[in-house]
Length: 618
Image (cartoon, rainbow, N blue to C red; front, side, top):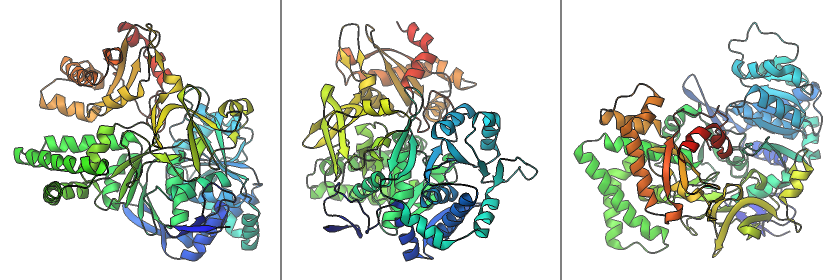
């Protein structure tokens, strides 16, 4: 078998051909063991304890996974069983995930924002036997629906704080599981179990966000994941010794690939954010070499920078505006793949030294070699803005069903507005009704317990139907919308709302938008304002408000958003212009059923919940 070296990792010379391997290892457990044995006491990951970053070695990684695995085996875990993890990101999440796979079992993540009812559905659909919960808050969800989950053998609690007097026949503390694993430790058995894991064994279940019904369990084998990892070597901005920040939910395939599995390939160091609320502080502390985030995070950083610029002195605002202008001039040539003229380069160098380098340092992006965005559309203007301030941000595309990755833009092959070319080993084509279709070893095997849904998802010749519509130009894939989101107006015009919504979200006063108009005479829009920036506007302009609802109803705020909508309308044809809008005056969080865990609005739910607002516009 021919091989090649990518970032120091031996992979197939022709990605996408069997057998998939990374440095000769064909399963995740085998790769974990090899990396841990090779790197020993070197730092594998860090986590904060009482406000101080603590380092944990590759030896810690393997030993913890072994003890958890052996403890679960003593409790009755068998090959093929499912374990579920209900926790925020932390090192234990990683240990549990790999412990399950080392024992030939399957790991599944549950979002901490899921309700008790949703937890019950996921446990029963997957027939989970062992459930790990982070703390007393997540434990309460189990206790609320425990009688409805007969498959559960044991619930293991990671954080005992506030539970020292708690006792339940099905529950135990994580420390007890470690102790059980130590008592019944058998390294030879553990190694034999790893060796018995096969590439076509099921490795993980990734549940979809459930925007169109109950979540579906995406079944990914070790081969699927390794194929995705192998291909991602060509695009992800990580290499040996690079620092990463893990903060998106590990239930999501993007973060799972980036922060759990990619480090096994390249031996990078993962830093676990304290919580979703501390991401920007942790970003400054870690200053990672690569940063992968969903558009909502990149939009939030952009908004924060604009707010800081507005609060600066007149001289500071002028310097910032001039620096960004210099950056935009340079970025125009870079993004077009053209040489930067000497004068433009010198102008940028000056303002980069005076302003932009300090800005990147303040954001925690001074060491950033490459940023990536995915999981939802992002405004091309936002991508250009990041390039202007010296942060090379590239867009990619993937799904749970493609092991997280399918196409990506790269520094030497980038088309702003597209999601890039297909990565090695992955084929992309445009099928019927302009639907994007994908084929490769990274494509999943099917949906758990849903053979009909699985059959619907593949073409007769074996291509995955993504449900997205788009086009290919010189190999670059551009996504124009979702098939299920296409708006057909009463006049018979077909409109894909994604581009309009993306342009609206570039405004730092708009957090999200849903364009309405199916079977109606014209387009309207429901808009979520950006609370922080609109509050700042209200304070600066002495607009009275008492809470979020009154802020949304203030005439000055409505006029502000109208100006933003009018500006966007100028960029579209008359039939695509928004004739009216309403502000959603309820502050939504990930706990609301209107948002997915990655903060995307569920269009159908939003339209149903706010039907009165929509009807008022017609």
